[in-house]
Image (cartoon, rainbow, N blue to C red; front, side, top):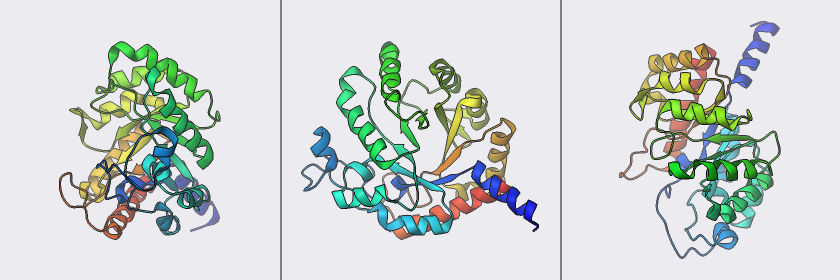
Length: 282
């Protein structure tokens, strides 16, 4: 490989950063566990949950060495950890590329949004992911609060809406329309890297989001198979996608089933990342 070819490969990798979603490492993904002995979130906003069982900081150096470009940090890994862990995350060898939050956009959710704002600032997050809300009659309220919240962030921070069933954007055309209405290009949307989502083909979502598509959630890459992964990557490239990816869930995570050891999940995530990388660079 000559120097120009090497430079082109490096440029290609930077065009499509791939992040490790820390949520995939966490055995306590779903359960509420009241009565935790330590909880940043409980101190800051009065919401009580038990602490995660995984210390993300213990995986960051390995993830960087494996080739991940950053992390999508599950909010509970920041708000429910102790102060020492939080400080270690602030000094992470991998950037917090996306802070995955669950704040609401109703007027009454303002204290919760303040908590998320503080965490994004302290962690130096390059982007924040949120869920828009589910009540059509409150869209104007949601938009007003989202814009006000975004105005307090560094203008370089991406603001990424997770579009999925259960919210207002169950249809791709609705998601694309709202991204356009928000105007500012740092408001972006996501798609999920599966054949169909909310009964609509992957290509429909990519086309509808257009230039506002900034992020892709990628579950169980290896399970799809190399040919299917290459096809979805082709669809993204054909529509001018230039955003980022998160390995969000991986082989071994099955709802309602015991979760494997974290090491097995991490190794599966690395395999997913490598297959996706190969497809992106082919």
